[in-house]
Image 1 (cartoon, rainbow over the protein chains, first blue to last red):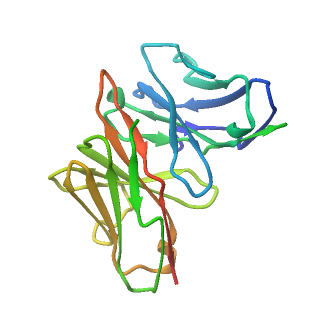
Image 2: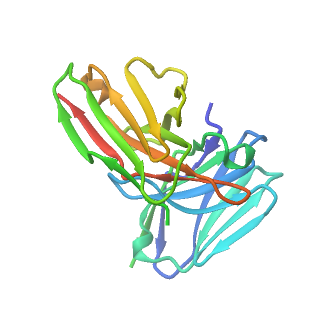
Length: 113
Length: 117
């Protein structure tokens, strides 16, 4: 049972444009969501998070949107840069992050010059 | 920042031997650390939750006698793969939970590539 789903295994975006990565979840008990960036043979790097009491959180070029009714969140990167090319994982947990994280399958983002 | 280190970064061992992987939170204290494994082109799968001073909580299907976890201090957790076999070859990643504010976040180590011959 995949509770967190990233339905796009890959995404290709031109440099300077907006990258939008999507994530859906099924467990209504999740109340804390995170995005991680991962390069091959490295551990994930925390990017941005959002609590269920909010619908938007912004940090520099990264913005996460949460639609609780649709059980959907998205990560916007603008403008996209070549260094953004990596695999992006969304993750979810309950109890304000106090419980274990459940990860999506990941989306490989490629930024083309 | 929140830095988590792992040692070794890669290890090759013979079948039947045991391998210990260390996970350290360098600039914060972590009451809880997590151990994941990742197979090629797949997501991270949680193996166990490690709480300082108590026994680890293992996920369903993970053999606790094979994957020994010790969380001896607020900055160190170890994972020992006992009697390793080729099917144990994987990328093992730890994370440490940093408490702060109304929510907390897991910060990941760089991972350890284990190859069992």
